Amino acid sequence: MKPNLFNDATSELSQDAFIAWLLQWASPHCKTYDPDLHACASDFTKRLLSLQTSSPDSIKSIKAGRKGDGKKHIDVWAEVNDDLLLIIEDKTFTGKHSGQLPRYRQEANERCERTGRKLVCVYLKTGSESSSSLNEVRKEGFAVFSRKDFIESLDCPSVKNDIFNDFRDRIISLEEEESQYPNKNIADWTGPDWKGFYQGLEEQLGRDLGWGIVNPPGGGQFWNATLNTPDTDALWDDRCIYMQIEQGPLCFKICEFYEKQSEVRDKIHRIIMECCKGRMDIKRPQRLGAGKCMTVARVERKDWLGADNEKVDMNAVADRIKDYESLLRQVIRDANQSGAASSNTTVASTV
Image 1 (spheres, helix red, strand yellow):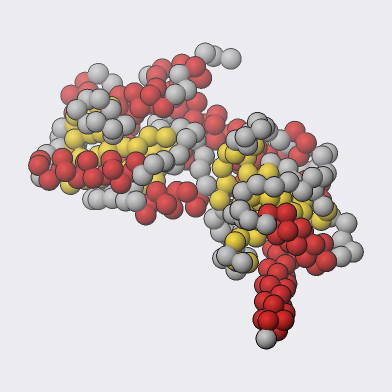
Image 2: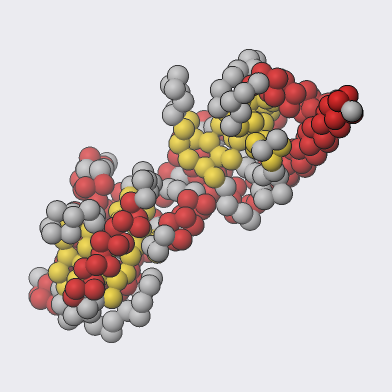
């Protein structure tokens, strides 16, 4: 296999450098060095700008750089012509955190007020992130530029530059890695397959899922997905009962109980088992633990996703999930009715 610089330079800093480098190639004078790379860089720059404003007909001037080039916290920036400031929050496999996007946008807005430029904010992601998380990014004023968008922008076969082609090949390989899960036996899935599956499940169900990496205190990192829809994301006693896929088992969980944990946990477990009486797929966990979020019932991977030696059937999986959601709605109704009955009994006994 041909060595690829970006198989070793995998950090966000390396990606920052490539993006700034590519933006710099949009400068008109670069056409004399490599007209094909210049044309691709110009189209890339215009595509980013068009996410939030009218793209200029031509790039007459561009100055681009990275964090530390006088722009404080902004990963990559570009001053285009005399009237535009592009800022890019560049992410590989991490996501936004700590209210950083509003701060960066405010920082850039203040600069635009001083210079008279119009601001364009882009969240560029070459890893994978859930749709629900990306929707939060959009609410904070950033346009999303995905790995697929980036691959389309770098589809410039005439460019022969090794740095350009190494980066393009690297992100194409990331995309392909997460698209192989339909062709693999379920037992052979690894993290990238689960990420691809969760994205495919979002499309199959026609809604956003909350999925991402989990690092339990006891170790054993895994990719999880929360399945609740608005009608199942219901409260019982001000707390949420929900379903979660834990890179294998599908778990029914209850969260945010800090008092009478074992009593609450046992009650919801009992209601679930009563609702699914006669079913062999929904079982008691090996251990009913205690904590902020507790598993009260689980379905093994083979029962909801498929056997180890099978390939996934997305239509069948979606149907099974809808069945579990229907069960969850019944559990919540029964839990609420049980709570109301308990309250009435308490009131009657005090009268």
